[in-house]
Length: 345
Image (cartoon, rainbow, N blue to C red; front, side, top):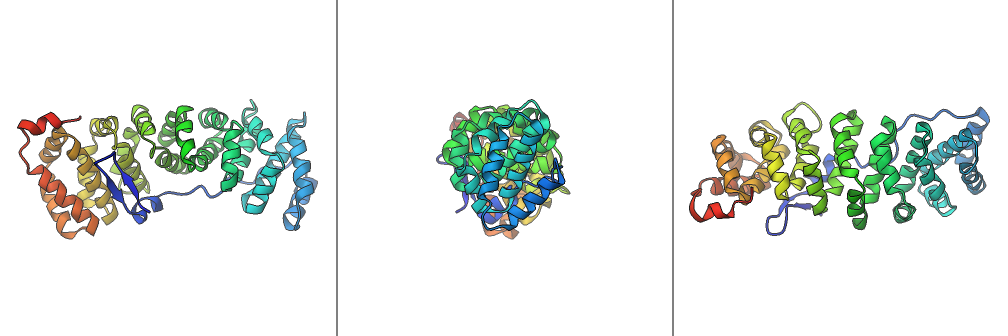
């Protein structure tokens, strides 16, 4: 089903092909292979991956996670991560054998490499739906947020992905937001590499389906980087950014921040020069702004919005035509009298 953007009474629905497909799904960690403590360990892992029953190795590795030697812990976490990376059956076996709690403990390690290994192993275990609740119940959310804030670049990216996976359970969205993840994800969106930006936007897209997280995102300054990405038509972040803007604009704080960061002219540029999907996104977001605020409606009209919107209503996708027609009708209404009392800027 498509996701409905906006609050009650002001829904703006974008079909799946135009929203969720814009995001990566963090299907598994994309880290480079970790260095191993010994060639014998690597050979043991290779043999176990090829075997039908790696149960004995799994129990041995979990035992090593509690070892006093940091090197043994790193080796065990690395091998668990690889066992779980592309094998759904192993993910269940590893979790059921008791790996989650010691791996969560590694995420709190002061050793950056050990923390990274723990984060990455938890990410791969979280790809199994049955493991999401046990991971969250083991206290993983706050350590993942700390890793997102202070970890290595790889730890930050994989922590964002792990939080995304956990947020796919509705009850976890609010817990993650209340644990301080939103500002950290916004920072990763601003300062991360290409993969980090994508992972952060995907996690924020999931978390901001919860209303209180939309407010948190707006207060954390999310609109600044999103508007900048939407203005860069040559980047691959335009569609992702527009999806998140649509969600966060469902609250007054988000709409105000979008306007404050210069979002209106950027959205109108998308209406004129973007792809068909981007034009649809932009028209939907502008409609949100104008439905909720006479002041915003006036600002949009003064930017010369009506001609490109009329053109879109004639040549856009079916959904873009509907949004553009509704928006033109709003912009042509008188902007005084009782309408002003409905302004919610």
